[in-house]
Length: 389
Image (cartoon, rainbow, N blue to C red):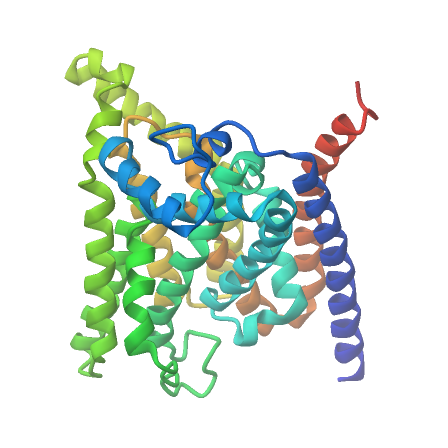
């Protein structure tokens, strides 16, 4: 027991040190990346070149955006709020939201109290090391709002439902007792559901379906459902519909070159985009997931758990839904990657609980992933500082 406690202290200390290094590097990269591209446009009222000055200007801008350019009103409102705060405040907020997302990932992975520093470090290392486009999804301000920020709300919404399935195959409730009700959830689940649904066209619909599946599972088990579960599901559905039916989507899609092609060629292009996302953008994440699943399942005989199956289903749905989009950029796989990371971390913890001697090898795997992420960020900083010509 003494040896086990000493090993845990060493791993926690190492995770804490590496996380602090990561925070410093992430902040330095944010300082080097200025507001650019869409950031410049969204710092105005959109319909004119007049800069936004207050919250009323943001509301006015998003009304124009909804009818003339696209339905992601919530994500772009978040973007304009961060742009309004200024670059320094946005940089600090971006780092804080990154750490918050790591914590929420651990909660969705079923780790009690967020998993402590090893859990946070594992999530952070994977966000950076497995990301198909770290710069455009986490550091570019418009990308951060569309993916980093909004994914926090999406995953918080999903957590509210997944925790209702806490049982023997989950790690939050080791006694098998139902989780305690979250305080005031009947009130705040409605705005949270709207935010989760009114986010990205693929992620909003995916988490809505998963929340519906949780309700169905509860009904089949005759364990009863709460009013908040229905309210949250309806509000998420409302948000998903609003982002999809926005008149601005049709204005924007009319300008896409793909519309010039025939139906068969468009189907090929959509299939190619889906394949590229799976076999290129998401491939490192999927490869790690398969490796961990083999260790947990066939090797150690551990159950995958229905919580992880639902997370994997949400990932598949969010990936597959992009077949409806004429454009599937690498940064759009961010949400899908986060869902898969939740499964990976959950299985890693199950492996460690079953075989404590594997905690060090698993930590080393996370360190290697972290080194990959640090290489990308370090290379960018070296170029910016003139160390690499």
